[in-house]
Image 1: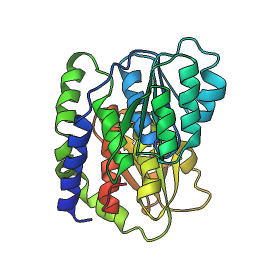
Image 2: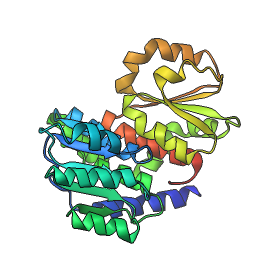
Image 3: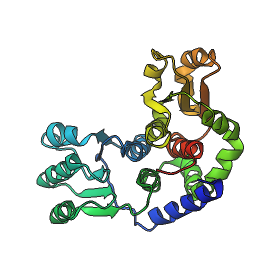
Length: 280
């Protein structure tokens, strides 16, 4: 996809997520996601942690069998799902049995599933774009928990300008984007906590992303593949020695986002979209 088309589509997705009124997510939020929808879940979870609130981030199976039946502290439930995910539907039904408010975010599903969601009175958010993973990530960003102090104003400004962020990424990381594009072999896309969204997104968006891995596992690299590390200024202090080791091999690429850890998640996803030339 051409760069101008990427900008056009990003603006379209931003306008789409702005069309939904932000619900009251409360505290003790349970966030449920499977792998493909994990980037969106992770961005929202990070915002709650950074705001000093409590949130739980689990898979549908963990939520259905190990959390919801036993944890009375769980508040509202938000579920991010792909188009075909029966486990997510089951988690929604269990949450209803536990008398929890449910927000269900996914592309439109088949008629039977939509009827089940209507029956349990879930707040239904249908992702009606051709790129549901990035769209759900943007929705999470706009629904992120409000921060305090000066950080709140900075975050607000960044979020308001997110539809123009491709220009900033091109200016700041253009050389890195080109080098990652030129990797011909399979590669490992590694991530630190704030950029997990981008690492997982790479698995779906970049054809030669063989594995998305936490940096601690990727640095072992028993496959001897090139490593693309997505990280942030916030995380990098804890990974200094590992990054020094990574730099010893010129085949590896390190991308450090000098941003808030919450927005680092969406920037890492947008960076990957610029590498692949497409949104997923």
